[in-house]
Amino acid sequence: MALADFEVSYEGYREAWEWPEGEQAERPEPSGEPVQHPALKIVDTTLRDGEQTAGVVFSNAEKLEIARLLDAGGVHQIEAGVPVMGGDEQEAIRAIAGAGLRASVMGWNRAVISDIDASIESGLDAVCISVSVSDIHIKNKLGKTRQWVLDHMLRTIDYAKSHGLYVSANGEDASRAEMEFLLEFIRRAKDAGADRFRFCDTVGCLGPFQTYEKIRTIVAVAGLPVEMHCHNDFGMAAANTIAGLRAGASFAGVTVTGLGERAGNAALEEVVMALKHIERVDARFNYSMIRQLCEYVAQAAGRAISPSKPIVGSGIFMHESGVHADGVLKHPETYEPFAPSDVGGVRQLVIGKHSGRASIKAKFAEFGISVADEHAVRVLEEVRKKAVELKRPLFDKELMYIYYNTGGTAGRGG
Image (cartoon, rainbow, N blue to C red; front, side, top):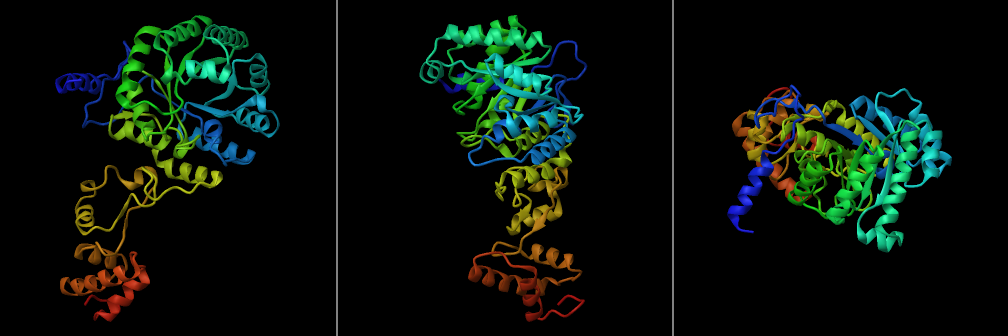
């Protein structure tokens, strides 16, 4: 592709947000306040796809609490699990379905009638019916044909709709499906009564531009609302989700902290915050709950949140570098894309090898101590030596020892 062709393609991508005809909301300007997209909905599958992370198991009580937190956060639909598993799984799903949540509660099903019966018995109002649509899966996993896939999907959709259920037709491995067959699958699902199509990038093999082109085609041709369900094998799940929404998809499938098989799924916190601050689209989420939600799920999953995890990592609002800390102290937006309080976080100054004089003075101000410039220089010199010796930032007690050892006195600066 020539550079000129790339630039034209990118320009189309940049401006392509779909806004339903007749809606009052206007496309937001890049620097304006976030605007609610009329059709955008968040679908969370932490309790199903997230729990499929190798080694992760939620207790029934934890599942119910996660569902309540997701509901309080503003998630439109919660995929609560796989009802046909029975036992504790179905018991937890029944409890969530009966908890009086505002969110729709969905169950995951194969294209099998008995799966739908288990969802009905669990008191759910919605089902997703999943079947492979790529030839890689159809031939090598199922050992079946495309016609078999169509027949089983359509029969199961018809059965679910006859029982008054909302139906998502899930195209497993849709990102590797032959487009002509995929479009036929979606059109036939729509004719059978499906309410939406879930586009699954099952092995996370797409990038944002490929995602955009595929979803743009599906939305234009198939005429069924599309949900993005992206995996993170190449670190692009959140970006691909946003690209799909730009192309006309209206549902964002996510998990809290990006839990999921292999490298995980698109992270709820990344998607809703990127929509708000980059795309200027309000996902109607209670953003201040994000840290509480993520920390609870991480604890329940036994998966600690990495300090550098976008949006909620403990280190993303820590500042050590002298240049960065000085900028943040003068005006937080110099080095922070959003305020820590937006997601329930707290800004911290870390004093170590890379700190500057402004950081020293600000840190001691937290202790109620005013440090003169000359004294701050002496403290900083000792701080840097100690940090190199210890190969880490310094603790508050260590800072106070250096303060007194360089001429500081109780209650006043040196």
